[in-house]
Image (tube, rainbow, N blue to C red):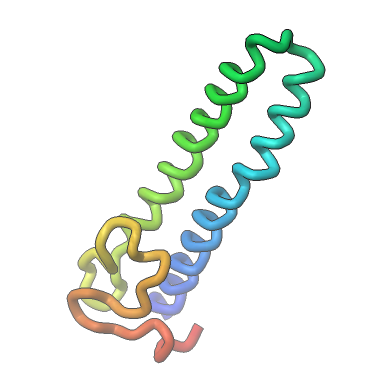
Length: 103
C-alpha cells in the first residue's frame, strides 16, 4: 500500500513540474500584456524579464528539486539522477519498473 502512494506521489511531482514548465508561456504573455497597459514602454522589457525570471526561479526550481529528490519506495535511494526523473521508468539502483507497479 505504501508503494502505491509513493508512485502516485512521483506521478504528481512529474505533473506539477510539467505544469510549471509549460505555465511560463501563458503567465509570461499575461505579464507582458498587463504590464504594457500600465507601465511606461522603456521599462516594460526589464520588468517583464524580472517577473519571468522570478517565475522560473520560484516554480521550476522548486518543482524540479522536488522531482529530483524523489526516493524509490523499494530501496529508499534516489530514483534517478537530478532531472531525469521526468522520463525515467525504473529506479537506477534496484531497477524497479514503474510500469509493472499497479497504480
